[in-house]
Length: 179
Image 1 (spheres, helix red, strand yellow):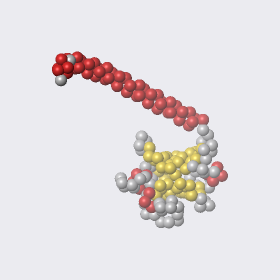
Image 2: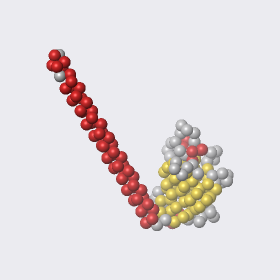
Image 3: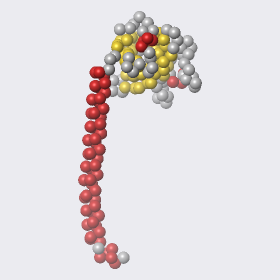
Image 4: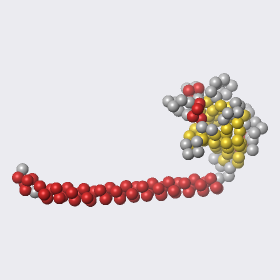
């Protein structure tokens, strides 16, 4: 105990030195992390913009209203290289309450083929992106409609029946409205 009493000043000085060294190290390590994060974000944005410029895409619908004339699908692009349709539409938030996931979306072809979507909410532009994959080129001009339904209306087995009447469904007719 007397050793601690005798060296009390030295121990306090050592602790102060450790703190004074640790704070700048923590600060600079955080700055390096922030710089790396900013660089990564900037790099990924540049790659995304490059892909957007270089990928061939075709506008297939623009400014279509739903069957109730209340919701707008702003644009839909088809990317032949990726066999994907990407739609930007009014947010699907209002087809759900706060405790449920976003609604589900399906493209339905003239022949009844159903393409499910990945739903992504774009808060920056207050829109919803719907990404449909594996849509063959030959079917793009034969899509009958786009349905957005509340997630609770999709059966557990995931098989959507477009002829079923769903009260809160939003349906965009894709016939005769192509760009």
